[in-house]
Image (cartoon, rainbow, N blue to C red):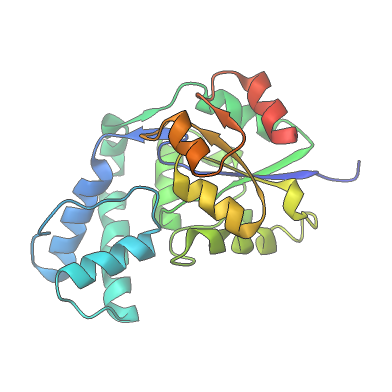
Length: 230
């Protein structure tokens, strides 16, 4: 073996970390900072990319959706997370088995791992830094919610960024996520998915979305390894 055989891409929210409303709070703060107004209704994050969420918020508040207005809200969101990063662990939990699973794959020479997340890159880094996971993934072979509005397209970004590591064919790329959005992204991109019922979607929800490999959580590292290595 001359290099890693698998590219493993982790979702963050609902897969590695469980939030308790911190993201929605940051959106309210960011919108107020960016536009001097209050959000009219709660934000449904639900596995959607930040660019998708931002576009909906702008439309809902009759703000023209331009690159400038989108970037203005994204910058405000990133700044809100940075200024409140010390508060994040008090509003989130590291899910059972998450640290052990990420550490296990970091130590496995067959695997090269990054993240594929709806978060802005700066926000994703803050979240994993605050829970001691950031050093275990390769940020240069990852993809983020400010790369593209469509989550499925993020797979292409990650694969291109990993080309200097290895030419990972589609059957050698594995997404690990907890929502139907993760399942759809893998299906559209033609890569494998291991779905975990660690978020608000049940095993049945994930199977209905098309996932054939579904785990209850990340606590059984051996079962997860078998699912990933196929």
